[in-house]
Length: 233
Image 1 (cartoon, rainbow, N blue to C red):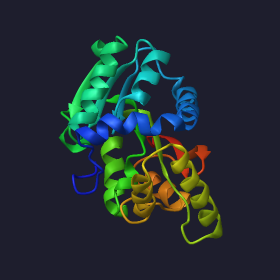
Image 2: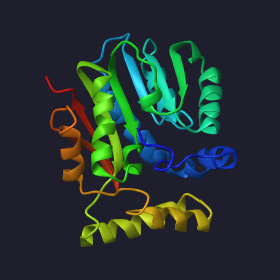
Image 3: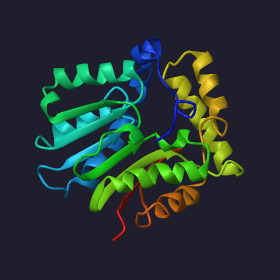
């Protein structure tokens, strides 16, 4: 799991405004969440799912409502974000199916193996490839045989004209979200500096070398890429 220096940790102010900032980007989030549900829909009706870096819980709520008997272990290092997630879970009546862990994956207590794990826009904050590989190895160690990994991150070859074109559209998308101009500028400047934007094939290689089958790219919208893979047999 990313450490405190590697991860964007949200304070109370940023956590409180996060959902408002990303509200206009909901079509992208909803499309990704829908396809994630389709990928994981073959799991048993009582599946156990590990949600890493869950933020304010939008992903969690969608999965819990789609699969009303699944149980979830939620990992989030930012206390203000996790507080919002808990409040949202309570409002939706799913708290009894959730275990909340404030911290990182490496501090999560041992438990029975999970049927699946999700890490949406998480591993991109690990700048070193070997540490990113170790993050996925930690996930693999917590999955049952042939358990699913769903991972989504920003990805592109930053040296190409394709990236430059996508970057321009990404910048317009951030502006469209009505984030403050200062925040937009900060997020764009972080790409390649605090956010590891790697070519998709490099990320696939990192995942595959961490104990998983070759990842399947199942979703892309602008710079966001999402893969699923199963624990290697």
